[in-house]
Image 1 (cartoon, rainbow, N blue to C red):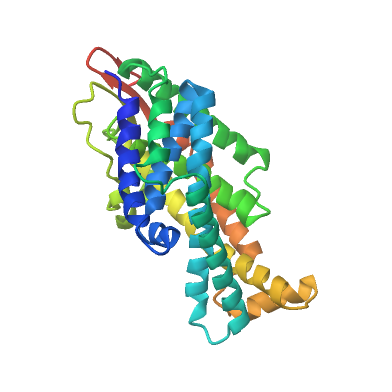
Image 2 (image 1 turned 180 degrees about the vertical axis):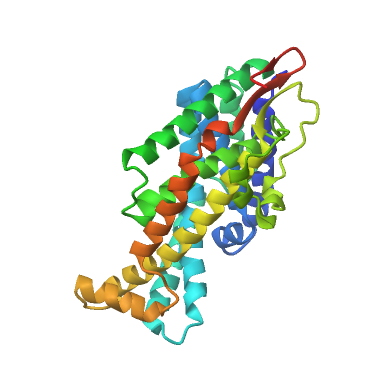
Length: 335
């Protein structure tokens, strides 16, 4: 059984439905942003990232670049739009700051509209999607059991790379974007792959749960819809992840996300001030925190907060215990 192309077809079809409706709108990019096109793109990008490591590297790397360009641009829209909304209700924020952020939002929307036209995503008959499907038909796909073994190895390499990233600076962070956000991105892919693989990754629970995991098993995390993986359906071979260690991964992603969002508020306001006011660097930073108020943590404190939870999480070796093994009709490994 070969599952690879079916996964791409599933998410390509979902994205094509969105494109069909978007093409009828006055502002296709804005419509795609408001209707969660980013999720389908995340799934397609995840599949490309994974398969570029498994086989046919050149083909999947090129496909990944196409999806990533769209996803990154929607992400930029989301960044400026949400920060503008978050701070726009504050009486302390000058109109020119909000205006700058809204202008950046419009600029990113325009960029996405240009990409959609230039790359023929909105063409009649789904021309771009058909080209992608043609490329997928040329791929040398792996059979199910061989593929799951390769995915198991892929997870091991991804976890090793994350640990290397952390150990390089011994969990010391200097920058919200380059350190905190980048670590969160790497961790987040580990939780996106199971969704994109449509049932070929399942959760299992060991008989005993280590005490240190209790702090991660909050109602918010254990009840999250995103932590409910797709059913295995007719899969005869799949990768098993330990449920509570998967929840701990989800907790880390969520907490780093909260820290990242608070930090990027300050980064965005500082950017707006730099572009709209004639202030020295030190005065710009001082003004940024003055405008955001006393509830806005300093970047230095946010970086320390991120360091603190990361030091605990990685000392506990939670990622090393995430992958349980492979289960198939003919064999069970590492269980």
